[in-house]
Length: 477
Image (cartoon, rainbow, N blue to C red; front, side):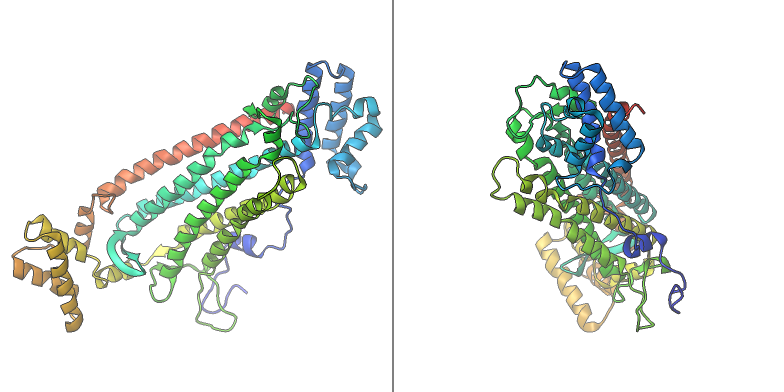
């Protein structure tokens, strides 16, 4: 029901898709797709090393590519009691004979294969998360420029504290999320070390060239130690921990937005497309997607805790716990954090600051008090601690007298012969030290943020190009 009386338009289609879609999704591509990439690189290496013949290589490659083209229809409906990969290998043996179809595991095991497939599968959600996060930062930058002069209070202990601007606040979030992105980008080194060649856990006496396989798959290096290769999942764990940090930044921003959207603040004018009504209360316009964002951020972090708990006290070797159970939740973590980012990006784009409400709260909250004290200090009237007490007493008197904050300024000017031009805009623009909200700082930070997000996009493109070119070449695209 789009028209509920108080809400005339329906929810934004993106919100409907993320929160209310009935479509099912596995959240991940089939392992077999990635296993076949490894197989193509592996048999090329076996041919190079003289471990298989040209005819064996050609027969294997053509059969594998036929399976890809038919989208594995020949394997559909068959019993995969020992796993889909062994079903696939049995198919090759049946099709090509044991001498050709049975060479895939030469110098290789399902253990190092599975560890390699995990890293290959992570590439797509890794790049996607970076792109979505970068888009969020871009929105924060754009809106910070648009709202650089919208004066509002910043809060400490949920009390109005000092004056800033909404643009200044958004820039603060942008810098924080940029650091989160930087940490995620830093994990690419771990994702670029290939476990292939470690076999079950102890390497192989067969003269394989695992670096050759790794490079054909777009990796930059291989593990030095076979046990480390199949036992370690630290690259994945580190990435999940970075998701937790990103989710924390997003959740804290959402907490502020939810508070400021409440009827006690009314800091935003919210269009119909991002609010919901009540099934019983006709007056309600709920910014409910902010609660969805918070919940998704919380749940996105559970993958990390589940993985570390699973790995705790696990022997440093291959095991089902290491290879399967501990990695089970990472795909859901990616999905949840991306959905949270998409919803938040939509909210920031569509929520319009209520400038009058923000300014009124800034003035009525006596947020300029610290600057009054600073004014006395700058004019060398008294020390800051004395100024702090003086202004505090003036504000206390206005509480009793139910007078306006302007009377505090009048008292200060009269008692200390110090004039104070109370123009919120002028005062804000004087606060330029320590990263304050003055326009010169906002402008400087805007250009810094633009340069930083360009660096992020360049880094993402470089990573994507390395991986994509390798796989395209492997698949002759």
